[in-house]
Image 1: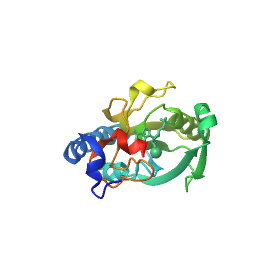
Image 2 (image 1 turned 120 degrees about the vertical axis):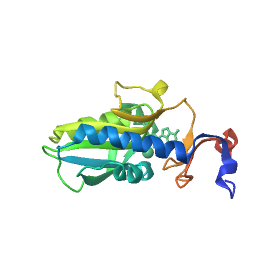
Image 3 (image 1 turned 90 degrees about the vertical axis):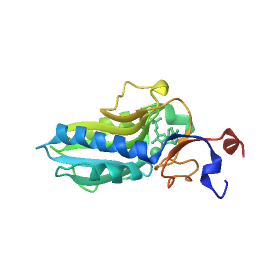
Image 4 (image 1 turned 45 degrees about the vertical axis):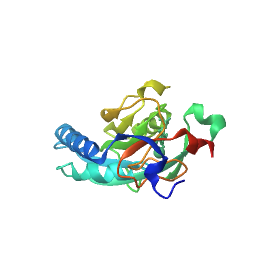
Amino acid sequence: MAQNMYDDLGEILLDAAAIEKRVKELGQEIAKAYEGKELVVVGILKGAVVFYADLIRALPIPLTLDFMAISSYGAATSSSGVVRINKDLDRDIVGKHVLLVEDIIDTGLTLSYLRETLLARGAASLGICALLDKAARRKTDIQGDYIGFTIPDAFVVGYGLDYNEKYRNLPDIGVLKPSIYQD
Ligand code: IMP
Ligand code: MG
């Protein structure tokens, strides 16, 4: 990994200004949809934290925050979409309108599992907001209700997204150079 993280990027896909503009638009759209409802915004750790922090400040309506941390059960079983919950919600969500906030929808298996799990706990509704959508890679019928950008099938980092836990703090979203994978 280079000292300057930008040296590891082949290109910048979305710069901070474009992201900021889109997050504000999403905030307006979501605020309209949830006005007058009891909203719990659930962030999926760690990838969503940067997006989440910006999104909640773009929502001019009352809401509460909660978080989940999850990991997949490993390569052998990842196609099942079963994930391990490493940190669960602090409060119960019975009768609440839940908005799940994720960094990216890739195969869709993670969100599909979380949607079923949280609906089974009695949420009044379960919405999905993801900053990025790699629609071409979907393996389930899951669709985001609020999507920032649909992107091509490339491995991206920054604005919360990582490669081996690095690059999450980049303000822009970029495509990693292939040479970084080969190291
Ligand atoms: P899914 O269950 O395949 O939809 O998995 C989504 C998760 O995969 C995201 O929360 C990310 O952690 C990770 N992921 C998928 N694509 C990328 C990428 O291009 N960069 C970084 N993380 C990614
Ligand atoms: Mg993630």
